[in-house]
Structures are given as structure tokens and as C-alpha cells.
Length: 289
Image 1: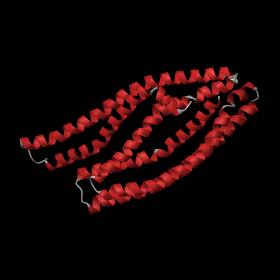
Image 2: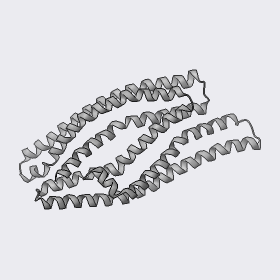
Image 3: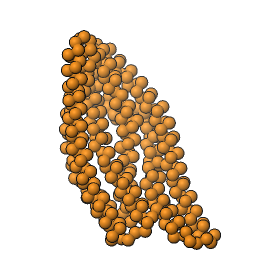
């Protein structure tokens, strides 16, 4: 069983989910610009009490409310559809694992462990796949949106992305090996309990704890380096926005909002890569059944 097989089998439900994610995040990308325009409209027209001035204040407000409602509404509908689609997927996946295990007379404890681990498939499809789509749209959208204010801001974000990608690749290679070891130990849980030896149970769980600590060390190092790089880009963008371009209050709000969006999305990449590495190993185990 591969990710692509699940995507093909449930392509209709997944397509609907991804379409709603696209709508939701386009509205999310547009929202900071609309809210920045709203701020400027209220500041500039605060002293004017003519009908025309009031209309000019209401229009940006209505546009921002519309984008907000589109974002919130599509997000709510998507979360409802996700549960129905991916729980059916989990039932089907566990059934296939049980059938294959029975066919080759596999140890029931190993089949049960793999059935439980297969929950990661569902978690990946239900949470990680949408998150990957969201972060991709968000990063690209934030870079494009900032180009409308100053191309140097977008160029700085793109330039800083290359070292972050290299760091993430190194991190992912280390985590793949550790995830394989972790799953090896996980498949021994049932055997350790069936031995009725507390020492064996302790050994299995101690080994899993040690591996998870190693993953956490790599994660911490990766996070620290990434945050330092992002601090540099944040200071650079603020210098451009405030000192060089002399933007309005609303524009500065929009730029900072897009920058935070870019930063938080980039920070999320290592976690997504770790989930992908874990799932790749799990896919090989289920396929070997």
C-alpha cells in the first residue's frame, strides 16, 4: 500500500478537500491586504464626515468581511468532509492489513501493530496532506503578495529559502533512519508483553524513548538554526518597509502579516518532512506483508 494508491482510491473526497483548502488559503492570503487597506481608510477618512467618505470606509470593511467569511466557511466545510472521507479510508486500510496478514500466516501481534501504525496513513492524509497544501500555498502567496509592496522583500524571502531547504534535507535524512528504528521497536511491543518479562518490556520502551530523544535533539538543532536565519530576514524586511519605502500604517501591517505568515509556514516544514519520513518507512513495512 502506497500513498498514491490511497489518493487514487479516494480521489473524489481528497479533490474536494484540496479544492476547499485552495479557496480557504487564497482568501487567507488576500485578507492582510484588505485589512491593511481598511486601516488606511479609517485613518485617512477619520476626520471626514461626508457621505462619500463614509462609503469609502465601508467598502474596505465589506471586502475584508467577505474574505474572512470565505476563509472561515470553506475551512468549516472542509473539516466536516475530512472526517467522513478519512475514517472510511482507515477502516479499509486496516481490513487490507488483516487480510494480507491472514493470507501469509503472519504473527497476529505484528499485524495488530502494523494496523495500529497504519493510523499514521490516515493522519497523514487527513492532516499532513492538507497542511502541506496549505503551507505551500501560503509560502508562495506570501512571497507574491510582498512583491506588490517591494520586490526586494520577496527576493529576500526567496534567497533565505535555499539554506533552509538544505538544512531541512539534512534533518530529514537523519530522521528517516531514526523513524525506521522506532518502528522496529514498536512492532516488538506485543511480543515483549506476551513474554511476561517486565525487563523486556522496559527494554523495548527504553529503546523507543532513546530514539525519540535523538529525534528531538535533531529537531531542536534544526529549529534553532532556522529561527536564527528567519530573524535575519525579519530585520531586513522591517528595514526596507519602515526606513526605505516609508509605507503607510496599513501597508506596514500587511507586510508584517505576510512576513509572519511566511516565517510560520517555513518553520512548519521540518515537522511535515518528519511525518513523510515516518510514513515512507511504514509504507514499506505494510507492502512487505
